[in-house]
Length: 249
Image (tube, rainbow, N blue to C red; front, side, top):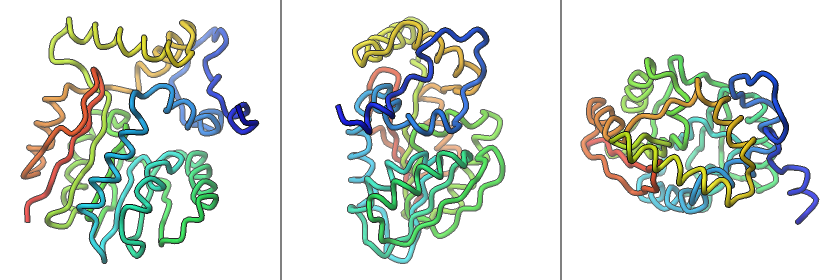
């Protein structure tokens, strides 16, 4: 293991926390986020590849590609070589520390295309315009439910005709028994990636009030209500799903 990986291994919940606070995307999380998400999210690398593949079919010259909740920039870097180099990328996140990490990663990746990084709270009004692709990768689940429809409406209005929204979410199963099973399988996945019972338990408590998943059917209904002409599931693993929604021409 390299020194970089040693110093950036996720140990945020590796120690008894007397009073669990709500999860925050602060400097502590930003420094270990890449390790955290790769160990916590099943097939995360494949999700990134699939998003880039689909973005390549919808990103148009003269438009912008948005990543809402861009975190440390993994998705922006992943789709960088898939679309025309003249297309501007716009990354939005409400955590300045995550955006700071993102900018450093883009610099290290020798990012040449035009891009902007903006500190934006997605629970508030979001300015989106001239977009051919908008990405919400494990982001909508952190937006308060009362504001999700407004955010999706803003995205829909900001997308050009024929544009696409790529949405990846942690979800609830359609029935309670399957939901319990899927959560069990998910925690087994985390154990296989060397997370301890304490880490799993304490992170679950920290996320309880801020990560609020919907059912797959609820997300699809919300997208259809927003006005998207076509919505398709492109990825599914127990309690994770990927959707692509296309605005009509």
